[in-house]
Image (cartoon, rainbow, N blue to C red; front, top):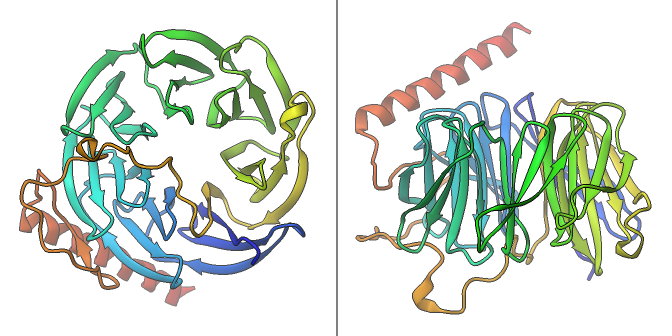
Length: 370
């Protein structure tokens, strides 16, 4: 049976697109669209069953890819959702403009823990492959390390400027922090900068292809490849789109890395990279025109866990369980879930529900007028 690949894109027009990609032929066909948000999509994440989308409407929507239905809505943040990341198939971490970072249990979709992560907005987060640590950056000009086993802050580093992206390498031995047009490469053991990549334009997205290969995209039409251990020299640069590259993703298919890129021109493209010839431009496999202003992308593959396997030590569980776990339950469609250490009051939840309902009414009114 041929592997299923689903290309997922979010856009300013509030829509989540799903395209079924046929490997080998590398053709893409529209599979579904979902218009559940009332504002532009800002971020999306996948595990082996669900897609989570975050929006400027302050909500997280969960989409069941196996059943192709909306699974529910998560309400806890008061501010645009800025970052989402799954760990294995057990947890989802979210960050938002309210400065909070939330840990969601994917079995019952309850908010298991809430961190007051940053004094300003949370701009980016990344979970260590072991699931024991997470990194976050925010508008308070700090890089923070979180101990997810004990559920506490482990380390705070002042970085003098606002960083917009933080990301672990696949092995977890290093991580990178993006500040405007530069990428600082950090060593995990020393927590010190071992090298810096200087990009000609402001960086919009980065992606580790392997531990020794980092893809960088910014406010131009090029994608550049670097070795994080020798970051001074660009290994390869190639024209990917007609306008600026917005997002990058990558996955491995039949032992070969595939880079996925999206652009403000509305196109999504897939590229095959030959690791034996990293100085040569990757081969274009397929492209899709969405006719939308794209904001985020990912790839869903059934049965493929998006992070490395959980720690073998059961005592070092990836995320600390709640003191009083609530009864597990499936979220019916359109049901709102709230919870966590800092529970919102009933009044706050009702206010948010009213706000979303009001937005939906305005949207319906506008559509009727059109």
